[in-house]
Image (cartoon, rainbow, N blue to C red):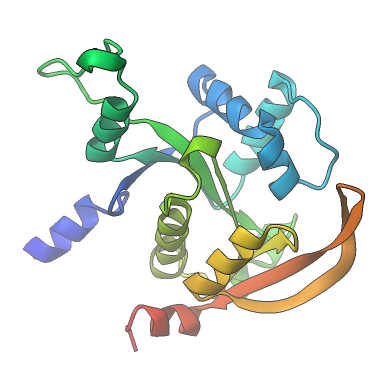
Length: 224
């Protein structure tokens, strides 16, 4: 029972990250706008031409994500947040003045979001297929540190263990070689390509579709 209780207490955590509800609040709208305004994010994750994003567009996207199965902010754990703040401190050990006071709740640093979305618009009629799409975005300075893979693994565990899904899919464009290597490393299976569907930097690129099935996840986690 003690082990079960600990697992439940840590259900919204992974090794270095904490997962918080994404809300239609001013703080989350501002953070979401920061992420979707990033031209690198737009190039890697979106099909429309790069352009500055405004509050209206960010608000619309938050509402779409909130209508999905699960959408959360990815935050650094208290330990990781402290390390980041220490590295970001001014010279001679001077901090930014945001140190936690005794009794005050520690402010966690948001670094992105991860979502599990219905694959079909009228999901109530196709729920029996237990099929969903995973999406993830990180703030630029937190990419390349292993946080993305950690968050995806947490989302997969949630999808198959807690939500009872049977299949989770995601995709990337062929020029996004980092994402391609990561998805393969995490155990996703490449299902196919839409050839030359993406026009980027005066060239044509494929959209690559990946998926993971429930039994493949079980094998990766040594559950069977």
